[in-house]
Amino acid sequence: MSLLNGKFAVITGAASLRGIGRKTAVRFAEEGARVAILDLDETAAQAAAAALPGGGHLGLACNVADHAACAAAAQAVLAAFGRVDILVNNAGITQPLKLMDITPDNYTAVTDVSLRGTLNMSQALVPAMRSGGGGSIICLSSVSAQRGGGIFGGPHYSAAKAGVLGLAKAMARELGADNIRVNSITPGLIQTDITAGKLTDEMRADILKGIPLNRLGDAEDVANACVFLGSGLSAYLTGITLDVNGGMLIH
Ligand code: NAD
Image 1 (cartoon, helix red, strand yellow):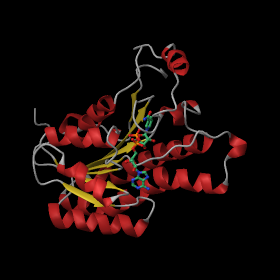
Image 2 (cartoon, protein in one colour):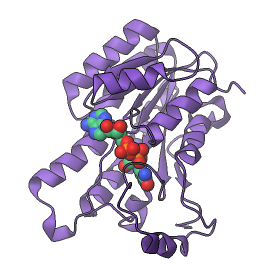
Image 3 (cartoon, rainbow, N blue to C red):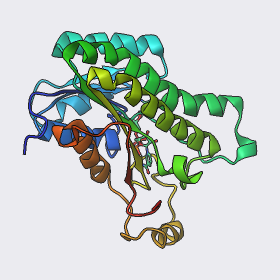
């Protein structure tokens, strides 16, 4: 298949080997897109880009919490690609803290990556999408935003991810006239490094009781949803929240 032939994509937080962003980059490249991988470490981002199928991909250092860094990364991507059609706001961190244990620094760390990062990177690329005739922005939220806590995220993570949903919907409303679609994905529990080592067998069995499809999610489950939202298959969808959770939350 080549659902993304001729498309240029930017994916934040896409260097992590088992991560959702990395798998999304692979699926995008398999569908014909050229991909820019943005992550904290330049060497890791470049290595991830070099390992993608096909050629002409890009790996760049970018801390999405830093407004100026996002603007600089966007300029570097545009200099190489000439245009950007798809942005996946994927970078995120979580902390399994209880309400009273959240320090001001914890709050800043978690909200800065997911929420401020989504705003920063979208602001950095919307002008190019506008002048290029449109685009698709995909924002990674979480089931944690919808049910008040996933498994590993504290209340500040739920808040950041709920903020992402509101931001994405507002952007969808504002950017529709520019043919820029903005949609969110709310994954359930996906087996990546964000949860690695924290999941005991007992916890896993307990969690599976609440998942009708009776398995944890894989990064590919979310990556395929990104392919759908990035491609013309979803041309009439904007402002939606796509649950990728095996039925963990049916509402
Ligand atoms: P991961 O830890 O495997 O990958 C996250 C990536 O983001 C890493 O490569 C990390 O280096 C990068 N990153 C962290 N801070 C950054 C920053 N400031 N700037 C740029 N990059 C940064 O995590 P994952 O499980 O693949 O998660 C991807 C997204 O999906 C996150 O937003 C996460 O909150 C969300 N999510 C994950 C799950 C899950 O169960 N894994 C569930 C719901 C939502």
